[in-house]
Image 1 (cartoon, rainbow, N blue to C red):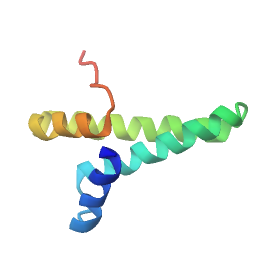
Image 2: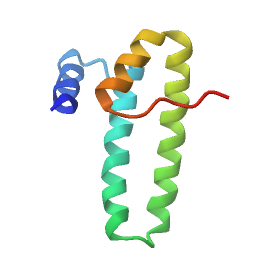
Image 3: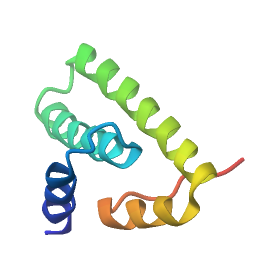
Image 4: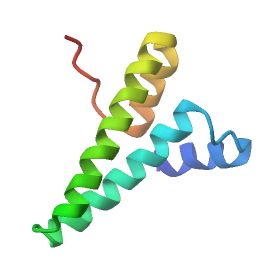
Length: 87
C-alpha cells in the first residue's frame, strides 16, 4: 500500500517534525478514530478529539499549500485525502 510505504519513508528519515510527517500521523489518528466511532456512536469525547485533530490537519495542509504547492499535491495524492476547498 502507498500509505505504508509513505510512512516507512518518514520513519527511516526520522524527520518527525516535518509538516508531511505530522499530517501523516494525524491522518492515521483520524482513520483510527473514525473506525472507533462507527462502533461507538455516542462517544462524544472521541468525537471532540476527532474534530480537534481534523482542524490541526487542516491548518497544517493550508500552511503547506501556501509554502510549497508541489509537496502539498504529492502529500494529498499519497495519503488519498481530498484537496481543501479555498475560499
